[in-house]
Image 1: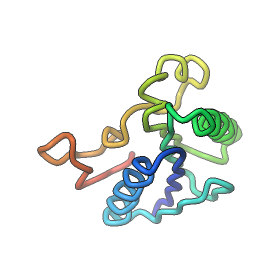
Image 2: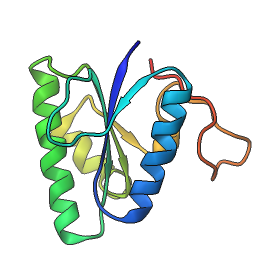
Image 3: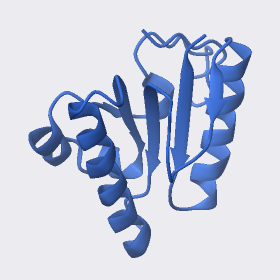
Image 4: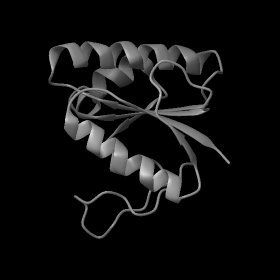
Length: 126
């Protein structure tokens, strides 16, 4: 079973979004952790903040740490989601490259509920 670490930064909305994501991942059979200090998971999802100054910098620092871990092979897949990834996707892609960016409900392989604004029902990360 694949282990996924969901790292949450920023506002309480991000916390709620991450809780929805973690519940859906667990329901889909993934082992889910929630630890920003270290990870033994091969898949990392960083839920970022792009509005609160300190959280924005914390998001950038966490993305850079995770991207470095991906380059050394400690992480296989890195997904950056949340408002920072939406606001600065082009800049982040230019700096980091192969990382997936976007809204958390649009992770690769994910199927959505009919209402696109609802949390995902079924998730498959490939």
